[in-house]
Amino acid sequence: MKMQLLIATNDNDYAEHLSNTLAEYHSAAIDVSVCSTTELLKEQLDSRRFDVALLEPSMTEAVDLQSINLPLLLWSEDIAHENAVDCMKIRKYQRISTMVSNILELYSGCVSNGRSVFTKKARVTVVWSPAGGVGKTTTALAFCAGKAAEDKQVLYLDMESFSSIRAYFEETGKSISSIFEMLETGEGNIGLLIKGICQKDSASAISYFCRPDNFDDMNVLAPENVVTLITACSEVADEIVIDMSCACDERTKNVFELADRILLVTDSTRTAQTKFSQFVSQNDVFQRIRGKSTLVANRGANVSGALVDSVVFLPFIQSADSTTVFKTLSNVNFEL
Image 1 (cartoon, rainbow, N blue to C red):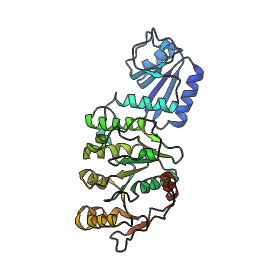
Image 2: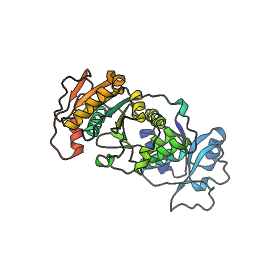
Image 3: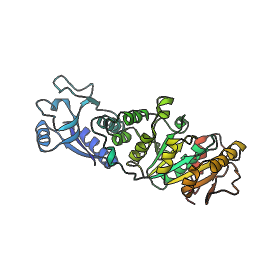
Image 4: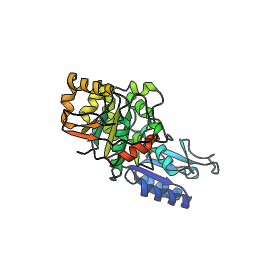
């Protein structure tokens, strides 16, 4: 369901610019109404309810805001606020994409979660290895970039113990820790918060979250909350690509169960080969995921006698720039 947003301002140029931008770039999530006078504002509020309203302070006198779940004053140093109602403020003259993120984040805390209605809609691909340093993150981002090039809405979800987001993307938004906090408390709407803080890399068109505030935020996340996070993320993407840590714990097993396909990454090092062989022969998890797994052989890995039907060989890319590597590998066909 779309958010019902009301813009109430007598600044017609600003209202037109804001409403047009919202209609062009955010119409999938927001329905916009506009009014330019106090009289029209009263008529709108008498006739319907709004989820959020952006209100010019001068138009809020003697207006009943009870039909608005989240009234926000359009704040500016150039606007008088003395007689305005007492409610939260949002800066008027700011980048509209930032304003939308702030609105969604604020509104997510005002409405109930509705977790029970979540159903997995996006295709979920998990990238995993029992050994570190084999190119798992590079594989995950290459897969993301390839799907984004097909005009898919792709979300990269970094679930590693130590995030490498900063090595690939700018971190200008809110941390994913705010999502973890809402998952833990169960208060608010996780889907709206996800829409509010999700970032999008302009070069690759990959969506992502900024890294956690600290190490513990990711590592204390309960297995059932991980499932809730993934299903909620599926509301905003066609493809979710999850970069998992090397552990094979209950959280990993839950994600494997939810996945549509799994990319198992290994390379030519003795350590990686030994750990992968141990995973295959000594862990019953492999037999449960074997049918939906693809083995990704990196750096000339020897995969003779592989126990999966699908094997992808990654070409060697000579570059110290990790971004260049994953973008080059985005042309690899992982859909064998």
